[in-house]
Image (cartoon, rainbow, N blue to C red; front, side, top):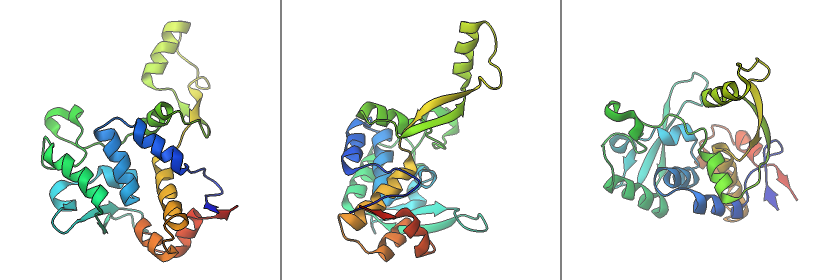
Length: 213
């Protein structure tokens, strides 16, 4: 029996292993592995700071979430297993600055973190040979508008600005996969999985875990 969402497709264990193998060593693979090991949301993972949120001595990390009614950020402490410890320790030893775990080198002197990685999962899935799970309609990027203008000698209309592209697994599907994997393969209790997902209510976790044959 496999737990899946009725509204969202989640990757299989084989596909997740393909993603890890296809991810570029460094930021890309580390972000993916941290998402897998923490069941964290991508915004929470990219927000990780070395001194405030990573404790190697006591082996825990802190993820900050604003998935609360008032929108305020709240800290959630999570245990650091050996795999997560190895990933973060390697990043610590090879760091170029002391603030952000996932530092964006393109920010230069500003020294800021990654805020978004909108194309990362698409790129990984494509390299891994994973087929699209659907289609999505998105607005043309500036580079695509420029190409359209060069080809057609005019700017695209408002309707032409919306293009259809294949949809691949996103970061949130990793949370769904890990929750399902822990219950199906590791036989972890619903209450424990709910705690790892940091849901206030177990019923929220149940939405993740609709059981189908």
